[in-house]
Every structure is written in C-alpha cells, then in structure tokens.
Length: 266
Ligand SMILES: O=C(O)CCC(=O)C(=O)O
Image (tube, rainbow, N blue to C red; front, side, top):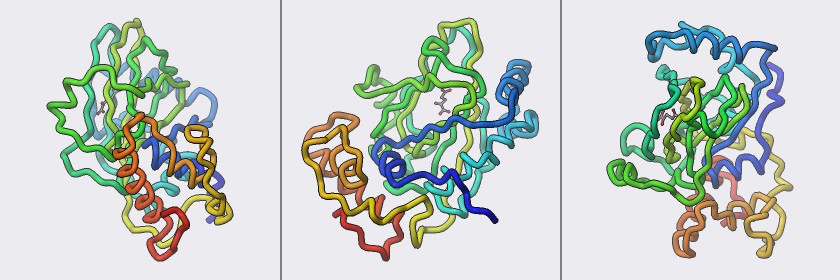
C-alpha cells in the first residue's frame, strides 16, 4: 500500500490537541459535493444511519485521502468508522441548538474518538453554521447547565466552503446558530474511533520538531510543538486552569507518541 500523502504534521497534531478540531477542504471530482447537496435537498425523511445507502456518494468522503490521512494521524492506522452517522439539515428560518457535548458523560482526555462534520454546500454565517468552542474538549460539563450558556468567549461558527469536513475531538462543545436564510444547511456527521494504542507516531512526525527551546514571548503566536502545547490558550482561562490543561495536553501528546518514547515536553 502506498504511503498516505495527507498525514498531518506535528504542528497540526499539536493544534488539534489544543483546539480540539482540524478542518480539511476535500478535493473530490467536480460536481460531487453539489450532487450530494441536491440529493439531501430532495429527501423527505431522515434515513438515520442509512444516509450513506441513500446517498452513496458520501462514501467518497470517507475514502478521500485527506480524510484517511487525518484520521490515521489522530486515531491510528487501524481507526474504525462507526456505524452511526446522521444527516443534520438546518432548515431555513429555524432557531438555535443549545451547547452540548455528544453522547453520555463518558469523556476522554486522550484522542480515542472523533467526529467528522461534512458540509456539501457552502455555509454562510446566516445559514445556521455549527458553532464550536475551541479548547473545550477536555472540560466535562453537565448538559443541563451547558444548555443555559449563551455567548461563550472564543466560540467560532463553522462557516465553511462546500466540501469541507471538520474533524473534532468527540467531547468538543458545540451547538448550532439560527438559520436566517432561505437555504437548507446540510451537515452529515460521522464518528470514528481508535482501535489500538499508538506505539509510535502515526502522522508525519519529525523528531527535530521537538528540539526547539521554549519562546516565552510568542504565546498565542506559538509556532512550534512545545510552544503550542505550552502557551496556547484559546479560552483565555486563568493561570491555574491553564496549568491543569497543559498537563492534560502533554499527556495526550505523549500517548500519541507511544508511551515508551520519552519526549522533552514535560
Ligand atoms: O447541526 C449542527 O450544526 C450540529 C448538530 C449537533 O449539534 C449534533 O449533531 O450534535
């Protein structure tokens, strides 16, 4: 099998650990995303897990090199594609969906499950984009309480180009903005899991990227693995919370490296 040319870099993996998401614009043959969107437009009921049978071109999304490369990097070469998938149609002139984390309160500070949110049609800010809060994936919160939160500092709308897939840590806080437009906003959600612990990095790792000295002055402009894991603070949290988060990030990075390999990040 030829090597995947779309593996993530060290910096992309470090940023995923910090922010909890990674975006990819898929390069599928002309017209595929548009055709998927048209088929979704025409659906009169939600096929649930059967969405890939109803719209078979969605399999091209799962098979794209950029998708397998990102997932191999984050979840290992033997990642699995979950049977559950769901078409989320945000109808014109519908309201918001509150903040939440998916599934039950079974959370993980490693990277063992990811979501893939695929958008076949361009999503503009008025079309009900998915909202995410970078940096929340290591924070468990009761859903009832989270549902009462409104504007969270650091939230971003996934206003994206047609054919974008956003990979998120399974536990990232998310919701949906209102669709104030006349256009249906489509998103198909997939889930992916790790089946084996890493014994070595599964992305495009270069050990030289771990040798830089910390640059305390760059902070948010950090551009090395060590600086990103140490200084990035997307939620703008206080020092003590930031220190706790940093320890989780370093543990997460070390798990991905394969626990037998010491890294200079602690
Ligand atoms: O439709 C969306 O943008 C998000 C849907 C959602 O929150 C979910 O699938 O859990």
